[in-house]
Length: 297
Image (cartoon, rainbow, N blue to C red):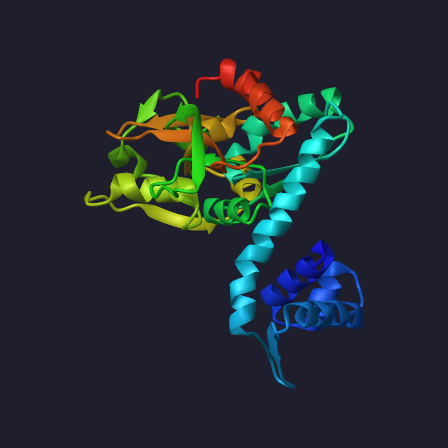
């Protein structure tokens, strides 16, 4: 049984399509089929049910899949620990970031590039639930996001900073000079909100739940950069974490004055899993970054 065979098996099990698996692995379909056949011969039982219409896992295939994933992950961790012995002169760091953390993490990324030019950084910007899924699949080393309301027992969340939900407006907006704003005041203005499912929107829905306010929601956007552009050029207000505006020009964050309005920024990693030295160093640099030390977030 070879690691290559297990990797091929896992990809076919994920796609249930030999052709699609071959494309994703950049090998020929015949090469995958041949290796799977050899694996089945060694195990003396079929792993897939094949027909002209579909490919399905057999009972043996379903049993092998989690074991194969664990074996491949363990081999990758073994390799990574050896790479780390080279004083971070090579390797990759895979970071997941929610849209609200873009400004906070950008400074640390630039500093990290300067200190460790040999390490390639892969960054995934997406929503919290996708980041957790990618962590569980070992596709990410760390994820930066606010603490979710539902905790996952397989995820370790270290507190990075405390922030608050705020009304984000341009510097000429009537709210721009205020230190805080009530929900009642906010209900007087047109809003452009992050789409449902994003963490800031979830936090906003939580604090307004059960309260008798009617908000004028004119736009919903799932892209933070488009949202900022809209706020800079209109009199709309949006609702995001205060931390989102770090290093952003032309916008102001006005804290929403509401009990329980706290958003906890966290570094999420897999529990009991090996953490790369590069990930540890990135976390250390992030904790000491100016974005966290010198900004009120």
